[in-house]
Length: 112
Length: 112
Picture 1 (tube, rainbow over the protein chains, first blue to last red):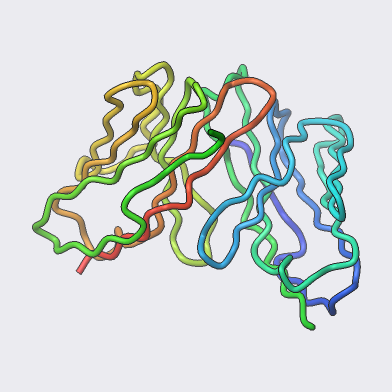
Picture 2: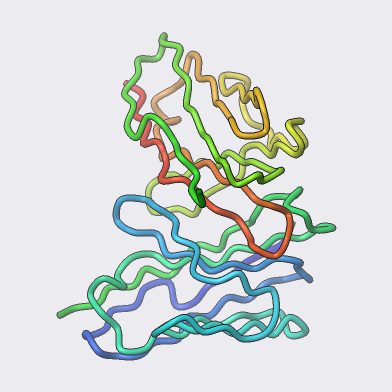
């Protein structure tokens, strides 16, 4: 099956800092999503981004499908950004029939 | 309604008990999923239902029995579980189009 690698595994930053999280995947995909999992376990969808660039407030993401990687940028970090960030991909013909495969995640801690 | 609702939020059960987890979505999504997440690990796909039919079973033990009564509901029936089955169980749905997956807040299961 497809391999999804995220880096770094852990990241500790001061409030106000910027960060870049990376996701590499081993094969072509028809879906790529970034999620934030809060301490209560809720997976919050940040971006659906199989290709291109998107921005939402302090967060932005870029996927270069031809080179099989995606980047998540967090600017002006706040303590509420703490948690685990997952990259997840789907192969196959699309349409949600194959399920998402998750990377191991980046555990982000923002200190006040 | 853009949510996936899971009940119960917490469940403690003995190894001889029978219990069920429930998942509901009213977004008209055609695909629904069960994921299992152990502590400090990424979610792992268990089952995929597409158009109310089971399309993927990721070699899950028979003590986990999924059911899709209609296009809005997904159940996971539990019987004779082991302590190692304790985990966060996440339900998700997908429209199969360009919006990605939406996850519920999960059921935190403890088997004693």
